[in-house]
Image 1: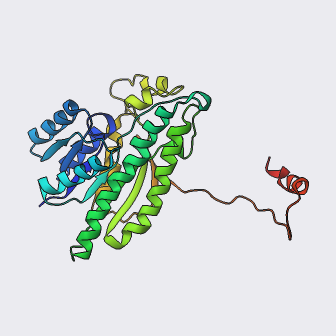
Image 2: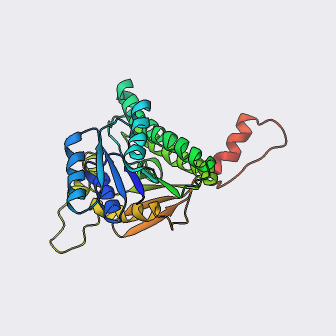
Image 3: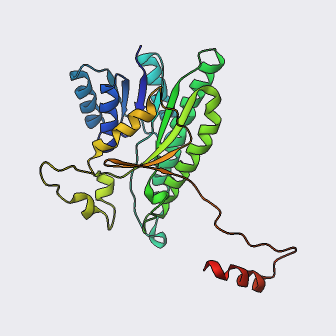
Length: 279
């Protein structure tokens, strides 16, 4: 039996490339996308090339539908080995103009969606481990430079969700190690519907690449990193990588860059003087 992977948001863009490459690497793939037509097209492409895949249209922002997604992989292929959380949306808006519905949608798809699929997969892997069938599993989450190294105006909610995914990855890696599951995240930089719609960045991603030259923003450049992180031989867990074109960078989190101390309660004016050097 080949390894089995779920890829969310796999009907188009980066997720599509993940699904196609994982299938090429021999994995059986559940192609998740709320839009059935592109999901089925990816499945048909995989099957035509000799691979195995099924479509799934569950909304990962819905707790029970996320559970049914995980269960479909198990029912269809007998097991689950890999989860690639890729699905995402944009509802860019400046803080003062953001509506509650925009907040709920972005947090729902990104943060809750990642967590819901991970939760149900984790429950399955925990049960497998306790039954003596220790998994060799992998989760690959999708964060963003908007939530890590390069915050963007208009993406308060999106950046917060993506930063949350990075933090969630680190904690999940600690928890899942005992069950034989590695958890990592990537921050992809590629040409997709989301990046083309990002204010101030769309033109950069839309720029034409002369024929024959390497296209650093082609979404297919991201998939090899995911395929490696999903592989049984990958040693990494609890890591976050920026992936763009031919470059991969390892990120590390918040670091202490200075400390001020007092031997008693702070006086606000004194504290201000101490902190002035950091301004």
